[in-house]
Image (tube, rainbow, N blue to C red; front, side, top):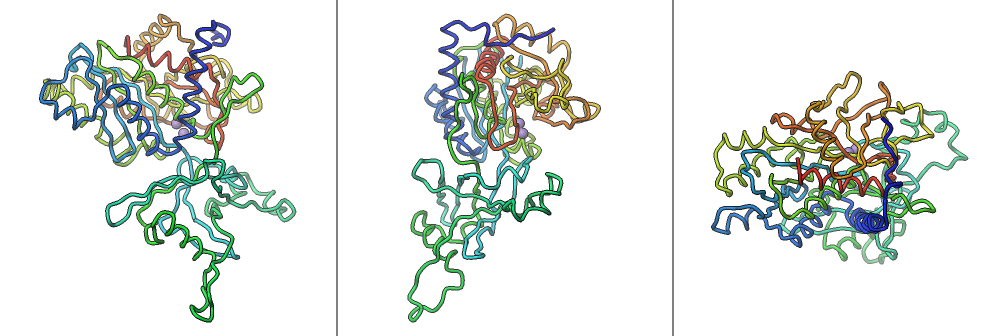
Length: 465
Ligand code: MN
Ligand code: MN
């Protein structure tokens, strides 16, 4: 039952393909650290591959047919790609799904203050965050500021070599005797994750203009006004995310791994996207969903629980001449999905948190989780054995290295994905994905072989499921 390490099977051609894919993936996660950035870049890649927007498709003035490629975007944060196949949509579609939001610090709506001659931006953390990870490390600021005049200002500071970066201060060890006695979850207060953004006062002519009460904050506001044409009030309508600064890197002397921010779940999102774009002609229509808000429960208009997917499928069926409520219901119920999210890679340093026979090993290929959940599989989508048999056969036929796993040993914790949401339509869904180390840390680790096998597996799935 042991699954072999994928690296042992590669020839030179495959190694070259693996390196090319992983190089492109590294660029993608280095340049796209928010859901909005991921959507924007993915749309550009899709258009390059011949995809047109749903609006453009509606304007064609003809029924959609096999080979037509459509995308739809919701709230600039969620993306759906559809490549029409030769079979009727009513017979079901093959779906790849992954999420493009990652744990981070969001700016509060009223974030800016000055204290101790420094300017700070106050944050509210997003997703499962160990607060102590975020102190004393270089941070970048990404996001949008939407102004009352309807314009949007894009912000991205801290990624270029000559950009400034930002940080949250840490308490010096010399004064930390009380802090060091606390449990790790309490050592750093989430409310104290305030980012230092300025340390120099504006200099004004006090005789003429009087004394500035908050001169450091004032200098910062002057810079924001000059550089971005935004005022403090504009923070009220902004979505600014604080993320680790810097590019993803190759890791290990053998360069076999990738160290990067946001691999949960952009490693599955990127490989799903690449597979969707690589397969031009299919029998069953292929769909890729890149969704937001998974880390906080898939809620909201851009999360998987919104009606965006269902509505867009209805639009596509209508444009393909298969409109009507019943055809949509049949399509959804007859569909098959790989719901992809990262798995917990076996970690020797925390070996007692895993059950080795059913753990994911780094470099051993695409992971399938028949079920996730916590305690007695609570909250899990438990995929049918019949469906798992089909998936095994597809992977074996295409020569994809895969492994089956659970998220750690029973009782160690647990987690959920978007799988159960799509399963509500009655379709076949199984959790799949790439194993990572240090999930939800600032810098997560993936193995290049797993990235490559995920891409191969997704491609095989949309070609044959
Ligand atoms: Mn995830
Ligand atoms: Mn996660």
